[in-house]
Amino acid sequence: MSEYQVINPATGQRGRKYPLITSETLEKVISAADAAYRSCGRASTVAERSGLLKRVGDLHRERRSHLAELAVEEVGKTRSQALGEVDFTADIYDYYAAHGDKFLQDEPIELISGTGSALVRRSPIGVLLGIMPWNYPYYQVARFAAPNLLLGNTVVLKHAPQCPTSSAAIEDLFLEAGLPEGGYTNIYASNDQIAEIIADPRIQGVSLTGSERAGASVAELAGRHLKKVVLELGGSDPFILLSTEDLDAVVECAVTARLDNNGQACNAAKRFLVAEDLYEPFKTRFAEALCRVSPGDPSLPGTFLGPVSSTAAADRLQEQLDLAVNSGATVLTGGTRSGTYFPGTILDGLDPKNPAYYEEFFGPIASIQKFSSEDEAVRAANDSAFGLGSYVFTTDSEQALRVADRLEVGMVFINGVGAESAELPFGGVKRSGFGRELGRYGVDEFANRKLIRTIG
Figure 1 (tube, rainbow, N blue to C red):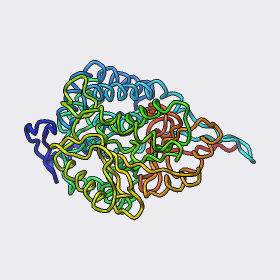
Figure 2 (cartoon, rainbow, N blue to C red):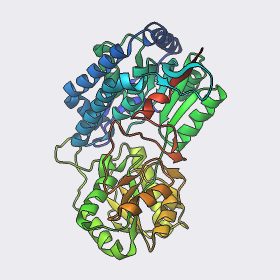
Figure 3 (cartoon, one colour):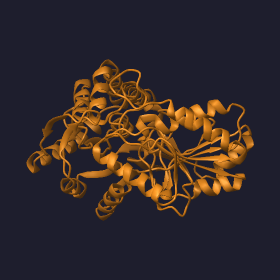
Figure 4 (cartoon, one colour):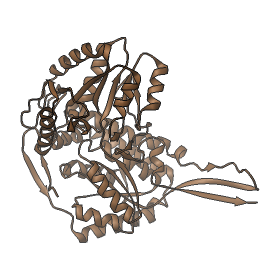
């Protein structure tokens, strides 16, 4: 288990260490969360919980500069993107605050026989455990916490070991907004302690965003103890270019889709599949565009590409790159590491015979391949163990929907990137996990959808 400590990936500077929670304190945390659920979560009104979420969103905006600075220091996120993440996070709290009444309204059921009435009423289920990753320290928490606090559930949150300051800051915002003690608690816990928490009968569900390995482990534990689990895991999203009237605009989208968040997003475009008549010009312009983006100090306002999150992450990315090249792929541009910094890199000739073909590159490395037909593009896109998101570019609207229907993914974005929003459900299929966050669907994952049937 890694220590909870900030290690600035851009400078290597180490901050103070945070001790793991003791067994005694952990027991108090779970007891307080359970008590808060029973005394406040179930007893409070939707209006009260919505108002609290609105205050949390407002506080994120008030503290956006400070919160962004923490993310830059912890994970090397560029300042502009860190500010954007805080703003998006505030939007999520605002969204659930504004739609609470609508989402939690009783849902009438039309009876096919008999007299009386029937309805479904959504209510909370209790204490939930959230296990969150480092790459979006505020956004990941919000998309789990906001809908569940709206419901009246309470949250125990275990963040990534490299995010101890931002995770503590989030808890402070909830307390300042007026959430009762135990409503949301940040903990610094080990993997063994997480197993104990999942086994605790007071914990009613678990949500994890992270790696396949972590997801499989948590799902096994949750299943053993009959706990509901939501998993958002990895992705190797295809970017499919079928046709375009503006290749430069598509290239701009491709650069953003691959380099955003320093290339460390589960739903980033990673595999670029290009129609053969556009392949050469796209490849040339994509390479030129990536070369114009120089890695730099993430704390400076104009930097778009910073370091990967840690030395360990850089080592892993280098191992994957070496595996791909040693097994036959060619580095078209980039590929030269400097500490924790990688330039935008394109791999050509990465085919299914290459063991790196099926891996997720969690950093600014793209693969590119051409196809000669729509069917071939769909087969290549679906030739992955992952099924999170995808991007389809075409001038044919009927083709866009036809391809979208055939893709084995949880999300399809047509003719654009960066279109995620608080009202849009997020999640995948296959080894990318299961369950949905955000939008209307995010409320239902840990809700008791109770049937109430009145006869006569």
